[in-house]
Length: 165
Image (cartoon, rainbow, N blue to C red):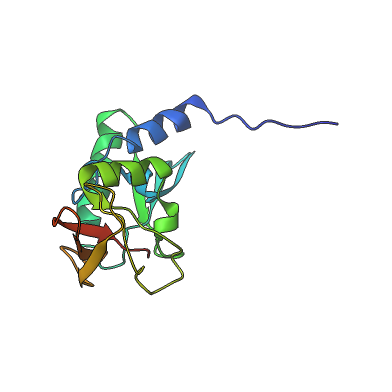
């Protein structure tokens, strides 16, 4: 039985590690790879090609993040580089790593619960501060379209919930 093990070349691993150093400008405790926004890293005779999917097609940080990717790659000698925005398939919270969800909670934002295919908000969301399930929805829209504003009935603190998208 022949099982072929595909080994990622060292330069590709290094570029993926670089992508993991670029923070999201809105939630700086998360990186592009935590969020699953870097879809592909490829190298050919033309140079480096990075596939990037913003969290939503109208994201105002898209140009900023494309530049951050380009500047990070260039600063580390990976040139030339082209960053391609890929809007299909659309980004989903299912692409977030489990570590990202832990860091979101530690940052004070309740991570997404459930499936991205459901447009409904959960009945209760766990408070990221005290862990209580006794929470109330204040507004379906928080500081950004991807978050809803909730209040904990135990500790009485408001908090954002990162909606399933």
